[in-house]
Image (cartoon, rainbow, N blue to C red):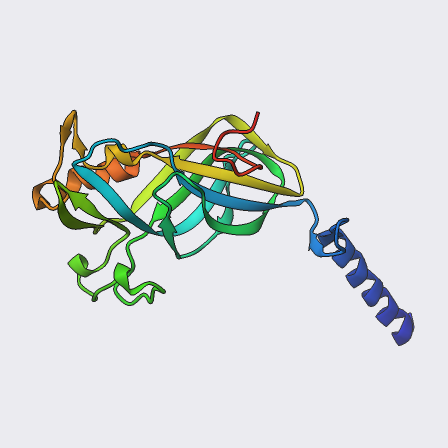
Length: 229
């Protein structure tokens, strides 16, 4: 085999690999990974606080490892590594965590981590890290008023969140949106009783409440905050 022939075969092999790995967006000629969906992940509050004693004005989360579990083999498909410093809307409207490609497949669970920064980690929002000490790094921040008094609650724990789809979700279109919903009514409760967000005795209870408040995940391609029919 001549040197020129060998070079031609190598070039053709590379071309075949590229064609198999990428596909063309029919709408605009944009090259995208073949067999992938451009998936947006959104977050929303799925409640309406009516208690005049508690007013929440700001919600911030540091999020890592946004993943979806495949039905076929139980393996996780990474969507975003993060960390993502997100400020959630308090009025029930969507907050976008990000848009990335994900392999088209059937998924059963959404997963992510409320992430407390590491001691030497740099974060884009300095409010999540006031220093290197254990009590100076935070994963979740809630601001508001309770009985007219201002409060800032800062969770000092990381939390792994796993939410099941209602059945399974087939991500097989060119673009899609998945919405994760939480219920902030649960955060400052101990059973039926209210918790003062400024009382350090209830930190563990509040942290557990925050983790357990992420209860729903659903397909929401029209981004209206409700499951698609």
